[in-house]
Amino acid sequence: MPYNLYETRFIRESDPKTDHLVFPLPKEWWSRGYEYEWAKNFAHHNETVLDAACGLSHPLKFYLAQRCKEVHACDINPGILSEQKIIQELESTLGNDQFNEKISCILKNIHFSQANITKLPYSAFHFDKIFCISVLEHLSSVQQKLALKEFAHILKPDGLIVLTFDFPTIDLNTFKEMIETEEFDFATIHSFEQPSDVLSTNMYGKLQCYRAILKKKTSTKQLLSHSIKTLKSIT
Image (cartoon, rainbow, N blue to C red; front, side, top):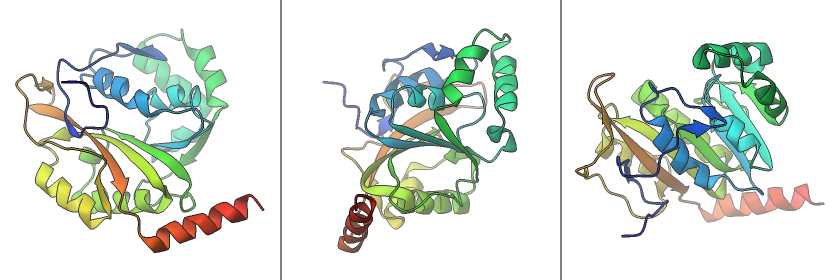
């Protein structure tokens, strides 16, 4: 069966994996090599993207900044606005300063904001893609709904959310109900069945990693609003 990037499902041990994204990934980041290897396929040169709740040292935003037209990254940590804090966190993560100069150059291509993803500072229909990697499991159910509502507001009508989270921290049936309530749907097929080679860890309790590609259920009103905004931007 061909590998379907857009399929929403559990991540498998047999899925493609990387040990390096801009810099070598720490071994304790048990799922990130799989998440990043999958997510980076959705980074396109002509797009405006957001790395939501990006963290200081996590490298996806750095990768996106080398691939996409316009890259935004936000985190609740005030250190996200400080190049020095980001570099310090990177040194702490890697145990060396080998990549400091490279990251300092990349940072110039990222628009940073200190923000909670339940209340984002961006305008409507701004992003082609929103990346949200291993974040939702750290939020309450109320916060998860608020975050999805914000994503719906700032995502273009034909935009996508590239999402991963821990299971069973998030219940999949509850997740499905939540995205439908917040006017999203799965981009293509989805499966809640755990495969025999599901990626798991006992590092933080028994966890698996789930990936999802979401699209907006765009109304005629939203499409019209987006069209008006686009016309204004080119006149």
